[in-house]
Image 1 (cartoon, rainbow, N blue to C red):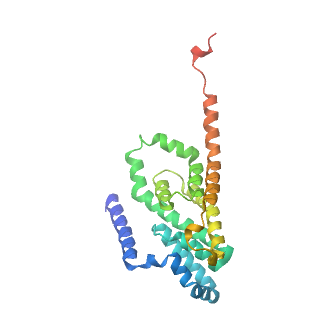
Image 2: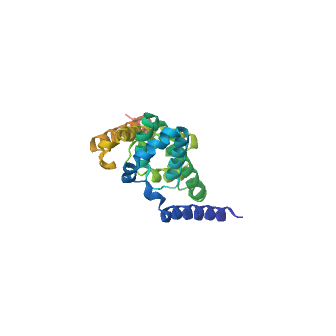
Image 3: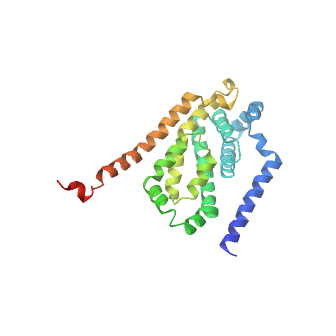
Length: 236
């Protein structure tokens, strides 16, 4: 079977799975209202079967992120509500593994093909990513206004190494995860998920993201200063 045929089959399987989840109504369980409605039952199950609940939560988070299903924010709240600040670890594990899965799929389905057929046109882009890719990824992860699934796809079509992608994801999502976990610990005081990320908190995340770009700006500035002048400018 040709490589292109394999990619098409994989893509169709993923699309079919997403459609199945949509029509089954499972994604409708990942809402803020459902969390508040069943929080008593969820607490009871977690108290009786803690490690089972942790494992199920992580697997669910991986699936939600890998398949780009809406509901990651509600799951993060759930982690804070059920597991306290240990939830930061569980969210980070689930989100990172899910993001890696989406990254690998995007690279297999799109990235390898693009890099092969447009190598010359992407040469400058690939050079920039090789030099500063981790700074850009950190910025995209630190600022939660960028859609998580789009960052996964974008990274997959680049030549960013998997290890770099993994650690920047783990580090970059940690601040927002902490905010959601803290909010989840105080679930009774929240009326809707939008109350969590106020403009002040978003501004802090934006500043964090811009800080990650400072090394890029400094390197470009140093390069400009180190460019030798043409010979005619050196003549008296």
